[in-house]
Length: 254
Image 1: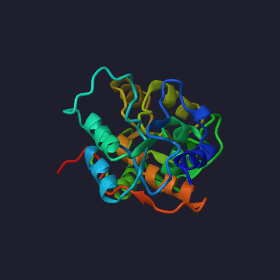
Image 2: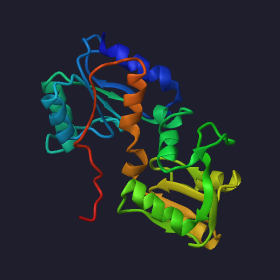
Image 3: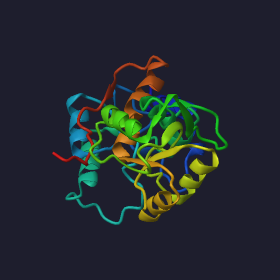
Image 4: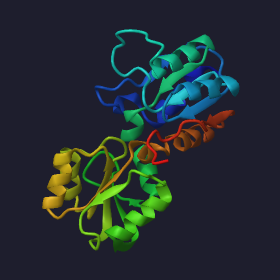
C-alpha cells in the first residue's frame, strides 16, 4: 500500500473539490509512492507532534490545519511550524492536510462536533450540516454548563439571556464566528449559534438583538478531527493509524 492510497481514502470521503479556494489541502510534503507504514493523525503539526511521529515510527502525519497555508518567504528554524516540517523532512515523514474539505463534507468535522456536544444534526438550508436539535430543551445557562463538562474548555463564554430556552442549534466548527454565519443561524431558526473566534461586532449584534451565542476555543471545536480520520481509515481496514497524544489546546488557564 502506498501513501497515495491513504490520501485516496480520505478524499473519497471528503473530496478536495469541497475545499475553499483559499485552502491548501493534500500532500504538503512527501513522496506519494512511498510504502505506507504507519500514520499519526493530529489537528496541528508541532515539533512535539513531529517528535511523536519519529518515536512511533510513523511515515505520514495527517493534519487538519495545513503546515503551509500561505507562500513561504523564508525558512526560519526559530519558527516552530518550520522546525516541525524540517523534522519530518529529516525523517522522511510525509505531511498530508485535510482541512476545509473535511469541514464542508456532509458527515465531516462539523457533524462530529455536533454529535460530541449532543446536538442531533438535521438537514438545513445550506450545504454543510450546521443545524441540529437537542433531545430535550434546556436553558442557555444549563446548556453552557453541559458544554463546559463535555469540552473542558477554559475559554468558553456566552452572550444572551441565561434563561433563554434552547432547542434548536446552529454550529460552525473552527473560526466560524462571523457575521455571515450568524445571519445563517438566525435564518434557519436556531435558538443559539455555536462557533469560535467571534468578532466584537458580531457579539455586539447578538447582545443588542437578544440573540444567543456560545463561543468555544478553535481547538475544542475541531478536536474530533483525529478520531474522525481514524474512523474513516479504520472502515477501510487501514492498520497502524495512531492519534497524537501531544497535540493539546494552546489556550489554558493553568
